[in-house]
Amino acid sequence: MISLNYRDPRPIYEQLEEKLRRLILSGAIAEGEKLPSVRELASQLAINPNTIQRAYRELEQNGFIYSVPGKGSFAGKLSGVDESRRAELREKLLAIWTELLQLGEDPEELRAFLGGKRK
Image 1 (spheres, helix red, strand yellow):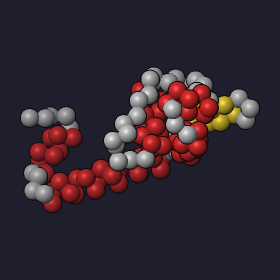
Image 2: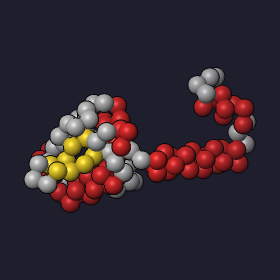
Image 3: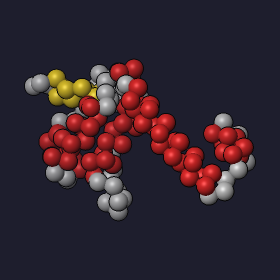
């Protein structure tokens, strides 16, 4: 279900957070579905439980999961993902767009690319 790339320069918790976020967004982890416990996932992936806990904390802060004391963590409603995540993604997209323009990309080709009309 989840595999980590130890050659990736990003911290393990960020990789784990991204993988879980994608699983939730794709529906592979359904709304309300219980996530593996911190200990269970740490054992499965052979990594420190604190790393799992940090990834879960980040996901919870961004509205992708919620915790029920004594019961565990569960996938949240996608509608519960607040506007701040969208704003964050827009900022990243703008930064990439700007850099591509600075590197000489044609604005019309970029628009076509984003519109799904790839060459």
